[in-house]
Amino acid sequence: MAQTIREGDDVLLYLSRKRTFLVKVERNKSFHTHKGYVHLEDLIGKNYGARLRSSMDTEFVALKPAIRDYIFKMLRKTQITYPKDIALIVMFSGVGPGSLVVEAGTGTGALTSALAFYVKPKGHVYSYEVRSEFIETASKNLKRSGLAEYVDIKNQDICQGIDESEIDAVILDLATPWLVISHAYSALKGGGALVSFSPTIDQVVKTVEALQENGFVDVETVECLVRRLQVARGKTRPETLMTAHTGYISFARKAIVEH
Image (tube, rainbow, N blue to C red; front, side):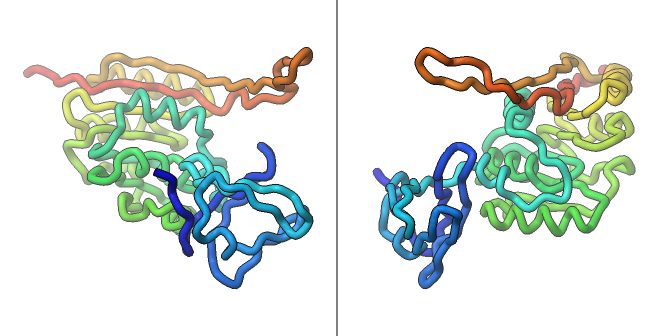
């Protein structure tokens, strides 16, 4: 069944792969672009996927925003975690509907938003962040994406400890993840997952050593590189630029220590 656009809904106006605009549908409002303006109330009652034309007769397509669209369009005060890395983090951590997840640090809230999207409607994310200005930005981004109710952001240093227990996964994106490993072990359920994202190999070595020393098994570190293709008959080839190194992702699972 087709989904109808209503007043107050978010819509992704698609012009081209490199030109998209995330807008909220409101009456008596127009959205202006270099290709003319669109009356937003004209979208009310249309189905997602509908085509419409601007004042300059340029065609736009009204798409339903996916979680990646909210992530790419969110307010930023820090570098966001890329969807290519988020996808691996979610897959290897086993996060899904109903999962209880501890995350640090919140930053802009890109990874937080993705985790919240996958744990809803009965799961929850507890996100630790020491910088209050980041919390303010992340809170706005979570509210915009409709995911704020699934997240508690805590203005605390996770290196000092984790309040929660019987957690399904701990996800770390901070400068000193090795200082959190023992706390994560205590907070996780047996077999629970730990995922750490780090930009440098020195951070990875210290983190993996801490994982091995603190009762974790199935330890693995990967790097994800994404290369787009320019596709056209007779001249298909890789694009000149690619999203290469963003960071290393280390995974592990908690093994119960027998006494």
